[in-house]
Image (tube, rainbow, N blue to C red; front, side, top):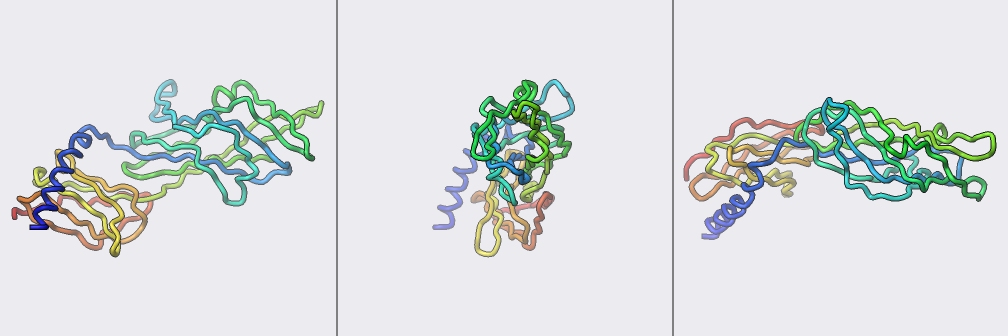
Length: 258
């Protein structure tokens, strides 16, 4: 009786979930973080007002804006392996070509206890374009690290003022893996669990066509459990291997009648 109650509850959850699954496109998640190489200054404060990612091949369209934590960042607090997350976004899987970093006016530098304005060319305030050129796989989270080189980015002028001419390299790393497949018959509408040891690491449901994708999985071996509605039998796949940057395809999983 308890098992039947759990299955009926899952049917209700699945029905709600299918409303959103049918319209889902194949996406990847991009996280953009900021870090810095050390420089011989007390502070280098950069005013970040926006970050955009360019999707696809068309130079004039395809820019997607991240929800960024706007504000002034002291780059010298982000050295020796430290970084800070600027924002993240779900975008269509496929090619990305550039990141655009939009700066504000509140850029300063501290030298020998004195704070100076850090002049920034207007072109950089409208958007500093950084080359990325990566292909993003469906269901994978990617971290793009914007690595400032402060020592090469600060220019001292003849009158003792300072200008910011950013030298930034981009480093792209996959952060996790995923499992996908298709369940038949589609009307079995199972809940699907990725289990590592005794922990359920990821959960999803099939869409109206029986497709499923479990995102955000660390490298490791998983048991993938399928819990369908009351007309069908549960099943599981053991020893499913996941690695960072890859999507493990289980192919077609067939569920029998109860």
